[in-house]
Each structure stands twice: as C-alpha cells, then as structure tokens.
Amino acid sequence: MKNDGYHAAAAAAGANSNTNAALHQRKNAATPRGVGVMCDFYASHALNAEIWDVENRRFIDFAAGIAVLNTGHRHPKLVAAIQEQLGKFTHTAYQIVPYASYVELAERINAITPGDHAKKTTFFSTGAEAVENAVKIARAATGRSAVIAFSGAFHGRTMMGMALTGKVVPYKVGFGPFPAEVYHVPFPVELHGVSMESSLAALQTLFKADVDPKRVAAIILEPVQGEGGFYAAPPAFMQALRALCDEHGILLVVDEVQTGFARTGKLFAVEHSGVIPDLMTMAKSLAGGMPLSAVCGRAEIMDAAAPGGLGGTYAGNPLAVASALAVLDVIEEEKLVERANLLGAKLKQVLEGLRADVPQIADIRGLGAMVAVEFLQPGTRQPDPEFTKKVQAEALKNGLLLLTCGVYSNAIRFLFPLTIEDNLMDEALAILSAAMRTVAADCLLVGRIS
Image 1 (tube, rainbow, N blue to C red):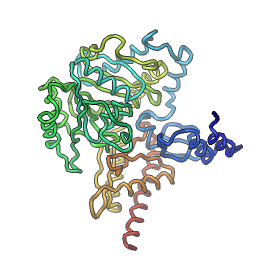
Image 2 (tube, rainbow, N blue to C red; image 1 turned 30 degrees about the vertical axis):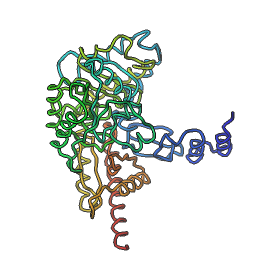
Image 3 (tube, one colour; image 1 turned 135 degrees about the vertical axis):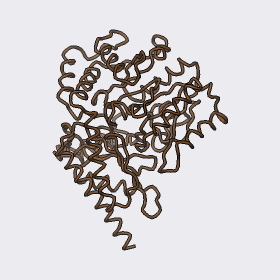
C-alpha cells in the first residue's frame, strides 16, 4: 500500500526538496514522532566543531552527536583509517571470520583501562548493547540475578536499558513492563538534598526491605551522570560502593558510555576516584562517530559467558574498529586529556563571570570538559526548565548548538569536541554569554512588568 502522506509531502517539496522546510515536511510524513528531533535544520557537511546545514548556515557544535565526537567531525586520521579499511573488507562477522584489528583494539583497551589485573574486552555496536551484555556477564559470573542502578541514570533504550534507567519521561513512559530484579536507589546530589550518606543508607534499606545482597549480581552507575544532569559521584561514594560490593560479592559495573575517552580530563571518569571496577561499558567517542561499543572487565569474569553467549552480527564492525584505533592515537598524540582540562577551566571561568547578570545560575559543575550549568528560579529555587529552554533557543538562533540534561531538564551540558580551535571556542563562549544575559534580562523585564 502506498504511503499517500509521504508522496504528497514529497510532491509538495518539488524542486526545493533539499530546503530545511521541505525536508522537515518529508520527515514528518516518513518517520515516526517517537524519534524526537531537536533541530529544525538538516546537516549538509561538518568539520571538527562546525556543522553546515542544507541551506549553508553554519553552527558551532557543542553537542558533538551527544558526546560521540571528542575527536571532532571528520578528523583526518579517522577518515584515513576508515578509507584504508574500506579498501580491504567491510564485514565478515567477527564470530565467523575474525580479524586482527579487533584483537589489537581489545589489547589496547585492556591496557588503558584502570587496574593492572588481567582483562578481556568484547565489542558491540551501541552503548545499550554494552550495558545489556555487562548485565549478562555479571549474571553468568555470579549466578545471581538482581541488579541495582540509581535515580537519574541513563543506560539505554532497550528493555533492560530502560529498566536500569532512572528517568521515566521520555525514556520509559508507555513501554513497560520492564525486566524484573532491577532496583533503584537515589544518586547523591547535594544540590537536590540527597547526600552521599543518605544514598548509601538507601542501599542498606534496600538490602533489608527488598533484596538480599547475596542475590545481587551487580551495581551499575555512571561515574558522572550524563542525561541525569552531569552530576559526578563523589570519590568517597565510589570507594564506599567498591567496599560494599567486595563485602557482598557484588560486581561493580561502571558505565563510561558518555564519560569515556578524555571527556572528563582523565581517559575514563572512574579514574578520578581511584576505584577499580569489575566491568566497564564504553561507546560514543570510542570510535569517533562510527557505531562501536565495548565491555571490558576482569578476565575471569569476562570468561563466564559460554561460547556463543556474546556477540552480534555487526558487533566489532571492522570500519568502526579501524576508526577506534585512530581515535586512541589522536587522544594520545593531540594530548586531549590535558586539553579537556584546559577547555573545561576556560568554560567554567566564563560561566562564573555570568553569575552577577544571571541569577538563575544555581550550580556550575564538571570534571574536565564534562561541564554543566544548572538553573533554578531565583525566588523559589525550584528547577527552571523554561529558562534553560530559552537559553538553548537563543544560542541556537545565533549559531551555537547546545544540549540540555537533568531529571528536570533544567541544566545545559557542554559536549564540544576536544579538538575545537581556540578562536572557535572563544566565538562560542561569546554567543553563550550573550544568550544567557539576554534571556535573564528578558525574565527580569517580564517580572517588573507583571
């Protein structure tokens, strides 16, 4: 049966089918509304920290494909690596015909992740797949079924990923029921009245009221919550979790999907705490835009799954693996860990300088270049998602692409490529400053009028 809506939209677009307006009309006719799309323009080409749309308007990219492009759009080393692999083969399915680059990347991941114990790594395509397989491995290794996650967490959009995720709208609404044996406790966020001590106490209450710790396979958390608001787990909290896991034979799984590969001023965010996890998941900037994820962990735990229990048709795609090997080279050669700290400090300095003009600023936080600014209403100190949305829109109007985050959607997170040029960073910060001041002044004016 013909999709009359699609054909009508395509016909109406006519010769101007590549304008933003025409593409938007075609998109609405051809794709479901469940795929939420933030921008009303369509990408034509990109380079490092800049994107041009189909009408040749330029935007500075502080979203980086949701933390995927720490090495920027089309880094020449990544392009060359992918082109070289294209000349060899694009797919064999690693489980059918293996290839050396997969093994080499696993060796490198094993070497650079925290801890000097024996490790093994396996590859998948998405962050959600990595999380799903980390749970499978943890259950196989422990013979237990329960998993504990945290409020505000984001671990993916698969059924297990949604079960672990600690935010209902938009990720979980309408999709239940979810897999059983998943429990949540509050994540420590002092700004919202949840101390480290109360979070740990909630764990103990959970063990007394809901699940025997001897039935818990794993505790999973992001060392810095991504979608949840860029809240960093205090090092003492991470250390307490490590001790708790050791006491009860529980595996500690650290989700580094958004935090990994130099974003936080360390190669991995968990390094800020000194804690050694049992399993780590990673994706996003691992392959600089190519679909690749990984689970790395203690060798004896990783070997718990039987042959055939792990894998996937596209898992460890050779083009993505080639890109990932180049990513690791770029991070080292261009000193992106150090650059993350420099860029993050510069951003924080600019944000701090805006406090006097923007009373909505409640918190400026972050490790390295994983920085967020959170807005509360000046009078009530309640979350202010409306102000946040207006700042985002004002910045976008002037060519700067920003993302929001947080359970209340009242924070702006910054995910610019770590390879961004200094002059472009300065231009972006000027746009950001002007947007925040403009919206704050408008709110003040409205308050006076009312």
